Length: 573
Image (cartoon, rainbow, N blue to C red; front, top):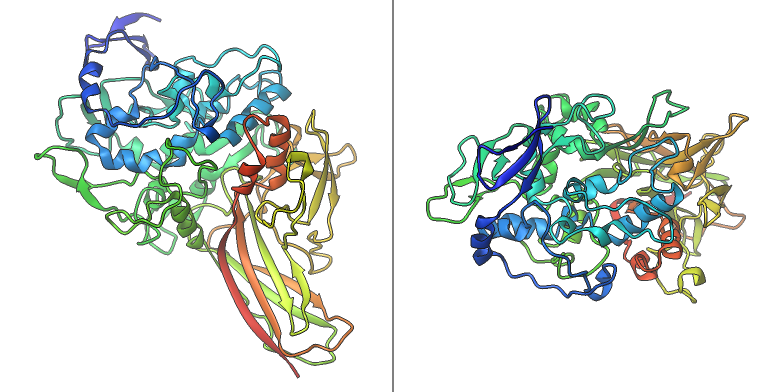
């Protein structure tokens, strides 16, 4: 492709194609960067020479060699945006120890390619550090012994994850590189370093540092869909599609009621209307007003909140990701803490009732019928979504009388985990696995064999056992049998049907056996809808495989949030 001097700036050289425009723009000189240094926010972290160890504050001392802007430079003029983004999982994306351990494991299992049929290298990191891939900072895979986590190869700017200068230099969808020629999934975006920053304003204020232009695309759900669908070009033998839907979040929105006016708000609700607004303090699409930059002449505008509130939080405490856990509020009464934002969002997602559960039973009854109804009332996609085969959303049900527990499901039991250094039960339950299934796992290949546990879902044959809305990786046997597996690389199908659909009440029935003793007092029923980002079993696999990245302490930080709950009492006559 021809190389030309950019017409917008004498300091840029770019590679251009008549068919696709300019993508690979390279800084040759950065006179303006020296001026911007005067304004850079003062964020100090430690330096070292090893693989980044965020648990003790160490980061490799890598120069700012990337061609994209350091977010701290952006923060000089946009301090509120920077403050919000700094604690977000967008910022955390490239340095997350769990992501890096998983990505490194996948690289080793597939000898450098994501799947046996040949997805390009660096498939995962492309969404977690798109600027790092653009700058070609990830080395070729040689062997498992020399392989390093992706974050070890990234320069300082490209370790910043999904950064300001990535999103605000996107010029549109990359139709050509997308799997279905729709510009969706697998980081299908056209972007590149540029002195022009795109945004939602049709009349942006002038400034001395960069030019600005309006982009309708950056305000669309399709913009988010470029990463928040993940499609693996391996046939799904159960759906018949020529690819597997590892993440299906955008498509769920696109095919659901919130992409139309057929929802409680009577209008299209975009991703940004929930994840960058004052929701759930308000209805979706309500944005605060403020000056979007420094300077006396900057007018008040609608402010899209750059905390990107969702269901994930950093699993580490580090100065890079401040305000992970704080009850402080911002100027609009919204929590500053990412954990508090997550809890607020999750508690707005679903409702749970015990409607239809009887208020009394006969004393000679043999079975107590209980009806739990869960409804996804507050999201624009299914619940769970995203990496939904690992997200756990389940019902905990406890039935008791004055003597004790009559029946329980969705429970957790405290156990020791000597394989990852927990020699005795630690008094925590958040780090314990559900009792519905057990995997016998080959740690070298992550092949697994499934065995049902005592709390396995027995429906529709019998209304007992856990109801877990977590999706699944399914392997299809030669005899047509279906078996869940823990390793997505071994899946023949991605079962995305188990999660809660939008605005559809989902009744879950329990026929609880009455024990062979007299019921003492009233029967008390309590139900909770619970959320957890990962099964602890999955995290402990990463601890064993990559102990320099993931530890038992990180497993303990995989905390549960109760999304909804209900209680009732049943009289015995």
